[in-house]
Length: 293
Image (cartoon, rainbow, N blue to C red; front, side, top):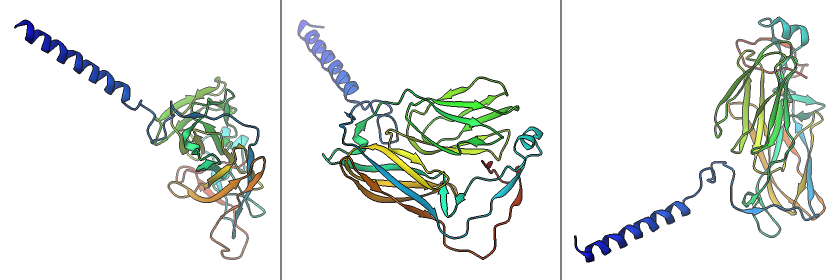
């Protein structure tokens, strides 16, 4: 090979190396796409002191569905600790719905920055999911991406906690009675992640995982408050379990500087046949249901 050919090959080799390096640098890092993965670039959110709140009440219209008593005979410990265990699909008190997950779905602050374009640091404090009385407490909870979830077993029996997400890896761990807490976190946002116990099929819970901290779970009186919201206009969503993926309703709200916006939601399909709901026996092996607080 001549000296001239050698120089040409050397130039081509350097050019191809530079192209490969540029391609690697410009490639979107894994976990930064729109599939719910945490972003590594963006505008870091910094409170300005003029943040407001979103408050509201979740109502249930019509006659509440009947709670169903759970047959816990498969594990005598469960029956002893929770003899009146019943489903929590609909926790309704005086027409108000508990355990609805309410969150900012999208929208933008007053300066035009979309809430999804901000980056947030996961809080250092943990969120606890307890197995107590052979049901999960709380039934619905929220956590941020990469926030630690503390899973405890307060029962004198073994549990098997099983997260079955779509955007995150499946996670399935046994936790004997007396065992130390388990720790888990989610790398991608997901509304909502189902939780079940393989040993007690009536046990279920839901975890809402978001990149931002603007979420809340309605109390048993139906009320909720989302704090620290920067001024702006947002789409607020309320999720309630039911069916394969639950039911979600949305509305637009505007949060003023240092003020509060109202977001009231209602679920249910209106009044049904008259008469008080009965407490029916539900075998755990037939329908996966949850315990009653």
